[in-house]
Length: 417
Image (cartoon, rainbow, N blue to C red; front, side, top):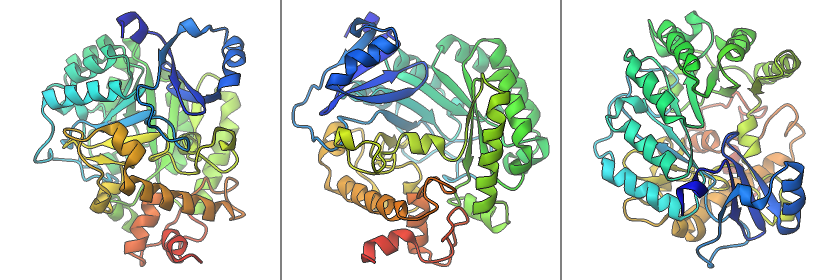
């Protein structure tokens, strides 16, 4: 594929039902039937030649799932300069067998060959990996939409300059409220450095987003965070703290919000949107809902119901292991699907029996929850990894679910009740 094609801002990927239209700048996709394409492009004042076209290279694909993942969450390293109380993957030291530079580069070429559209690099703290800049630069050159997460606590300004040079689609910075609340989670002397780098990156023209974990502290800092984000970013995402890894201790200390508090915060966020028209305020698990295949929403495409994991997105850990969801390795290692160093992503996505079992579990959970009168009203929907955790640890309650003090919803669906 020519570099001019790879540099286009829009992508059309062939699907069994028609196309996935992908906007690289906005990091969002839209499914289209074949007969919807012309009108859709016309409404956006685009022509087909404005899009990079990715035909299906394989013909042995299914009709009830998309051709390959839209997004890969790619953990570059588990090394981290912080020990956040809420960290679900216990970041700190690198894994014993993290991928080499060449293995990462080879995997990126493989993902590109299989029409993956979007790579979001995570950690740990990716800037602790010596080759992080070269990896992101290569990913961008290959034609992917590229984004990453960072805690932005680094001292070296050269990192800011490298982010500016990369010109990737988004750099997401973690800030959990005002200084006291942020440092209660992320550690002493982290807030000021993060804000300094946020401002510096903004001044360099880097496209930014803020991620804010919802907890008892940040609950009170909603408008502060929205105001901060409006000055330096185009988007802020508020999302719940998973009580996995170190997050389990965070829960034991009473730092998690309740079902009602989460819903009320989402209502307050909704009220703030007119005041900040140039800021995309994401709340109520908006990203999860947008990337799910929900009942009624995608019937016309013939797609099966399910959560974003294994429906539109997939995960690679820093040792190359493959997973449907990024939280699952820290709940049940039996869900591992292979390794990117020797397994074909298309074969796993389309043909893995183990992945299909996961999809079936996810689908049954979604269907079960859709019958609840809270579904999509005061509750954004089920959380697979938390119900999986509760399946093995029934003594744990889920504060984000109205019925979270009862048995695991996943266990209920498996029992057929």
